Amino acid sequence: MKICFVSSECVPYAKTGGLADVSGALPKALTELGIEVKTFLPLYSSINIDEFGLKLDYANQAIRINMGRSTHYFNTWKSHLPGTSAEVYFIDCPDFYNRGVLYTNDHDEAERFIFFQLAVLRILQNEQWAPDVVHCNDWQAGLIPAFLKMNFKWDQLFENTVSLLSIHNIGYQGRFSRDSIYGAGLPYKYYYPGGPFEFYNSFCFLKTGIAFSEVISTVSQTYAQEIQTVEFGAGLEGVLHDRQKDLYGILNGIDNSVWNPEVDGYIAQNYTLETFQYKKKNKQELLESFHLPYDEKIPVIGMVTRLAIQKGLDIFRPIMEEFIQQPVQFVILGSGEPEYEEFLYWIARKYPEKVAVTVGFNESLAHRITAGADMFLMPSHYEPCGLNQMYSLNYGTVPIVRQTGGLADTVKDYDAFPEDGNGFTFYEYTQSALLETLTRAVNKYSDKHAWEKMVTRGMEADFSWHASAEKYVQLYKAAGKNQGKIEQHYRMDGIDLK
Ligand code: ADP
Ligand code: GLC
Image (cartoon, rainbow, N blue to C red; front, side, top):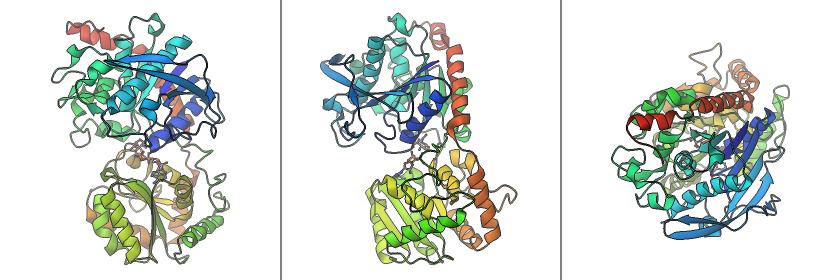
């Protein structure tokens, strides 16, 4: 089976969040199942060609792409995902990817990702490599299913190629001006209110992907249900509900060669469940590095997060000061919305013995917090999957989470389920529910017996990618079986897609 994996971020090359972790790990797990994978990524200027040993791909140079009135060229670089046979192709077009950040609010943001998606298909043509499935991730790859059915339909190479769209976060939809449709070379006739391209007066890449891919997935079973509701669907619930039969939830896994306390190269002291007593060296080192006093009896709560409203900061901010009057310390790493960055700086200044805050993106600190903290907080408003709670469980760091999306699928409350609870959860998205749960967790910390049980359950659980990768293979097959289904659906409405 041949899979073309299209993503706008991928570890170790470019990362803003969990999508990068998934894109770095899933293709690896797929190749271990004997699947041939080619991954595609823009060559952002932040990617260091020498550091990653990228090689110029002489077969795919100076390829021209017309987008409406503008013309751009790209070169291609290649590498392999570390330790695998999965090839990675980097689309090199400085006009678009020389911006300092991965995503922008620039006027040509739509063109940046239209170009990327067209470039992927152009390389496949050049290589005469026909994938069974193009696995499209998020809105940045949401147009490919439509491209295959329209602009590229003439090419017999893609005769048997179908698409799977994976939605990692329905809150990010890729909505642009309707004029971008011309740039994409897609037929304007499908832009009408309620049509496959149109969403609230904009051209929506994600909606297009939902409409034209053979199968749709998201990153946990609970989130697959949630996004079909008004509360979580961000306006796309109706469209998703219409495709209910083709919508699946597959939980992300974790890359055990990266997020594993036994081999983690970033942390002060490696450990396993058998040598769990060494974990405290990581706590000592973490606190020392921030000049926070160490006391074995005082639990440290870690947070590593994008500082976005999704992550529950609006219920956390008002209760944090009251909560830290209890015997507890915080180490927080995050970046994002300035109002939360300022708040965190303020509270760290006010409570220098209790709170350490780092604003920015810092891979090594993320690992040190996961290993050094006793608990890990994720009070997310919504969470499609969430990786940090699984990383924490793997490190014997007890998660405190809101019961939503993938958090609900991975963390069970110890008080409610003493037989198999592995953390602390709350359901109501309120300040009081969060405060009550944090307080429960801190009180429980002195109960060594209960704590040991939670730690053991977390560290013994298997969150590796293997099982999920097998489920993706099933989905790829399901997508193949759906070949022709979308075309048939439109034909019934008297529309011949092309
Ligand atoms: P999301 O993708 O919504 O941000 P996930 O839990 O799926 O949430 O994944 C977040 C990933 O990004 C994790 O690997 C986490 O460690 C990492 N991360 C988030 N913020 C930072 C940061 N400020 N510095 C380093 N890593 C971060
Ligand atoms: C998104 C979601 C997160 C998920 C990640 C990877 O960024 O917010 O919950 O884990 O994608 O699928």
